[in-house]
Image (tube, rainbow, N blue to C red):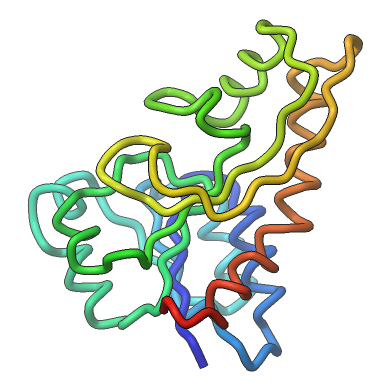
Length: 191
């Protein structure tokens, strides 16, 4: 069975969805959730779901090998960023080549890059009067939102949509597609 480690920064709905999806599956299991936010709701979700969860600070993540050593001990087959807001250090990516993926709430390369997350993305989509948006699941590299695209799914943006209604559409796409794409990756020969 393949081992999944999730990184999250906020409420953890994608993390919870992945944990539940893989709960009784033979393809993989979420073995740990790591967060850079000691007050993140994802920690409460993990507690109720009985999944190991730890928080860390920026020094442990970028200046020492503390987080890297946790990952090495966990031996993940796949590292999934699910609403994780910090740039991943190159030295961690080097240790886990093509094993770190992210979900982004837009159709990359549009609306990607530093500062483009959550509501900021949806507000930008509305401001630019886009007629469609969606989700992108991609490999993580040393640049924000520039890794190779694995999967995209689109949804319409109507003239009456707001950032909040777009967020709801994106959330539905994430819930529907993210676990399936992760499972497909676990079953591929690349891992």
